[in-house]
Length: 356
Ligand SMILES: Nc1ncnc2c1ncn2[C@@H]1O[C@H](COP(=O)(O)OP(=O)(O)OP(=O)(O)O)[C@@H](O)[C@H]1O
Ligand SMILES: [Mg+2]
Image: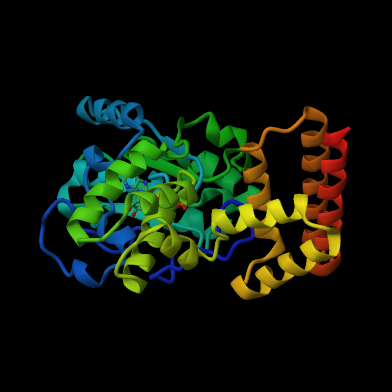
């Protein structure tokens, strides 16, 4: 899975087994009928045209110009998950070839076998196959290319050059540094940055209206915050909450995703700072069991909460350092109990430091 390593909270519930690598035709906001009703929303509302792709206007307009002039170069899309890379290339294909675009493109992703031989054979066959309504060039999409071995990537170098006459490649990945330089230099690179909250908000608004979701204002803010620039995550959380609750508010969103509610975090940190050691320890452990919070999420929440506090610089540095070490020790197998007391101790020391 190519989700970026983030906090250790459980992944947002998904309605599809895969991540929606563009296998299903998605006819959502473009208003065309289809059996769209049972599709997960990420597929149902996958942008159909380049105009539907929110944010990245510079990228889509550049590509549109390429297409108009019939001068599409080889493309390299990279950036974090859920920012529209696969959607963009599918929209490009649809623009070039019309609705029957799936017959005109070869899509290979990480779930396909992509050793050297397969790449050579499949691409060769596809490139040499003549199509009836050929539009000058065909499109080969290599999704999740950072999972390809170095050897397979090297084999690709020659293939790209060999077939440039009638094939264009689009290479998609999360981590561009895993693509060998030789391939990078053969492609025009586009970086898909995490989507700004305002852009996610725009798209969410359309979905909320189309699906009649009862999303409250604080729910929306929580959703935008938790989505972290990933539209797929935003849509998945929204769909899960809509299915589980009549009213999608802040609490529903935090419950659905298993993230600690900010007010819980506040109560915990306040107790850690002000209560006596053992009282605070008992209180926090009880909250942990009652609400099913993981220490890892507590640490992430505490980190965010500290940002909103006014602290002497020394104290802040001390606390951040200890949050980081506790998180590290947890990730290498330290016990929750011991690490919780360590964190509590560190916060107590921090408070003492601030009082000096
Ligand atoms: N820029 C965007 N505009 C509108 N919808 C988007 C955008 N980016 C992502 N989405 C939504 O999120 C879903 C997933 O997007 P997409 O498959 O394009 O992500 P990706 O960048 O290819 O991610 P990954 O790196 O995980 O493959 C889409 O189906 C669409 O509903
Ligand atoms: Mg993708």
